[in-house]
Length: 305
Ligand SMILES: Nc1ncnc2c1ncn2[C@@H]1O[C@H](COP(=O)(O)OP(=O)(O)OP(=O)(O)O)[C@@H](O)[C@H]1O
Ligand SMILES: [Mg+2]
Image 1 (cartoon, rainbow, N blue to C red):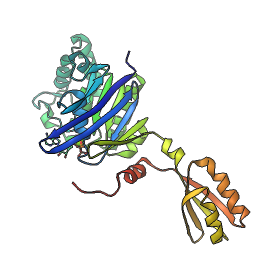
Image 2 (image 1 turned 90 degrees about the vertical axis):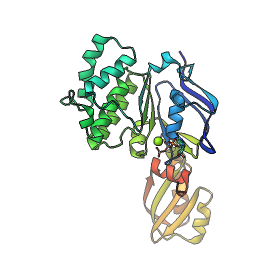
Image 3 (image 1 turned 60 degrees about the horizontal axis):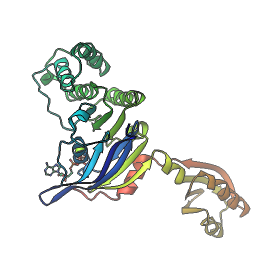
Image 4 (image 1 turned 90 degrees about the horizontal axis):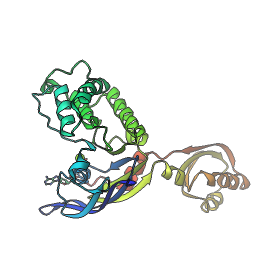
């Protein structure tokens, strides 16, 4: 069994003179929850559509579950919640899920038992017979989530799954991602809600103007870069110079010393240096760098579209 569920090398998509995705090279392991993050227009949805075989790459290649993208047998083992979906809106919620289950080749009896459970799971247990054209945005999104998991997919692609969802709906998405992973599925998630991504993903990649510009293990950057606030008194200018061997971005305002160290294990040295130089230390508070802060720092100022 392939250990990589996604293995893309140099995928590129151009529309006329516009390059939507320049170079998508990434590997996602089986069972991983992978966050794919970038500003509007960066190429996230186009990347997902190339991986699914819905958009033909201009160049490059990719394997999904060990097979070239677009393979029919593999498609039945994938779940997809598109960013902008247009379902047949004369169908009821249960008819729509049945339809998608049949497309995946699921056995009719098992499918009929499963549909009400799925609709219950996404909070639409009482709405199963209404035509989905009467649904609100969030209700439609919940139907979309149910159809994406009807086949217990091995890879679940979610493009902005929390779009239009209320707080309970956002928690539902987090819980569904957790449940799918517990089953052994790989989850590939596009989202602008970085707090949600931080809670759900093991690893993230940043994409900017069609290029993957970095991948990070969740939490690893926090171990590498720690910002610290130290409440101090009697800090001489020469002490600040001495601190430069252990820390960066050193700023002292009133009694608050702010600096950055390469990991928390550098902190005792900083405190020792301060005390040895005659400073008084009242408190040391490390600050976790959030995914949002890392994102904004990596992406730089918003260039506009
Ligand atoms: N069918 C298309 N024809 C022409 N240009 C396209 C097409 N689809 C996407 N693009 C362009 O490709 C670029 C990437 O679009 P894409 O939808 O992949 O971005 P995204 O990262 O998903 O953005 P968002 O966060 O806004 O959803 C954009 O500049 C977009 O205008
Ligand atoms: Mg998109």
